[in-house]
Length: 236
Ligand SMILES: [Zn+2]
Image (cartoon, rainbow, N blue to C red; front, side, top):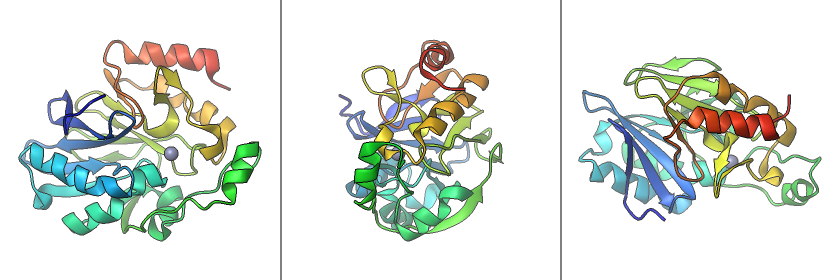
């Protein structure tokens, strides 16, 4: 399990292990020192994100962009803390924006028995400010461009992010890499079947590192691993 505050994925791109390798955030720094932070872990991860920022010699005023892959408590939980610490608002896909603003997570899949059970327990986290909302295929002008790949299913506005400058793909919860590639927990998806359909988008784009919000990165031919996983387990 990773104990370091950051793991370097590519020049200017770091993974932030927030609960060991099981819950990750990400940090990108442009040549002019501007920093983008992606995913903030659970509520108590906020200070860890800020500590990771300090560990690369940057401070709160260097952070010019905050982003979330989706509005679940283990990604958006620390968002309010980081928004307060940096004075910035979050960018998130438009279909998850309201969940971030209210701190109330998206609905769970009612076709899954456990989803019906969990639906009675609200998925809550501290509400955080949202500024820009993203649409599919939008390229965010930061350090070579970050492409928004809408991969709905896990949540309505779930997005994966491809940093085109470094070739690092941030899958979000479209696919986990916890003891091997696997689907996210069915009961926490808004529409599990859709998750297994939209993940195919990750086989269609180019990258040299696949970075996961749950689990360590793949650096050796990651697209082939993901393609194999999708052809064995994906739906069309
Ligand atoms: Zn999630």
